Image 1 (tube, rainbow, N blue to C red):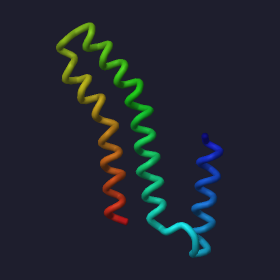
Image 2 (image 1 turned 90 degrees about the vertical axis):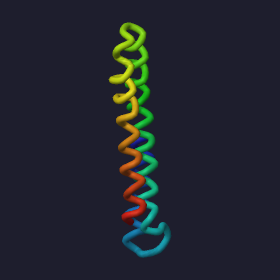
Image 3 (image 1 turned 120 degrees about the vertical axis):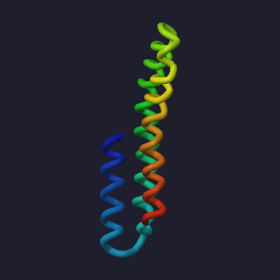
Image 4 (image 1 turned 180 degrees about the horizontal axis):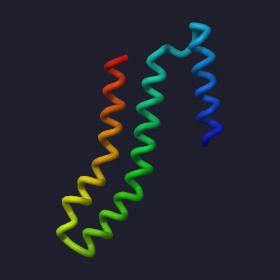
Length: 85
């Protein structure tokens, strides 16, 4: 997967330097996509731990919910970059 990302990054940089091909907003789209992918991977482990904690103690529901939603804020911030660009 890292080789694919490296190839994609190289392609974007080469086409951006020549002024043809991919538009500048493609970088923002890639950033949002990678942020969503990273948040999904992070939520995989956090969600499992939160469900386990709530199964042990019902008082942990609030903390588990906050920790589960926290990675999604990164995606929201990445979406803000689209409007800035």
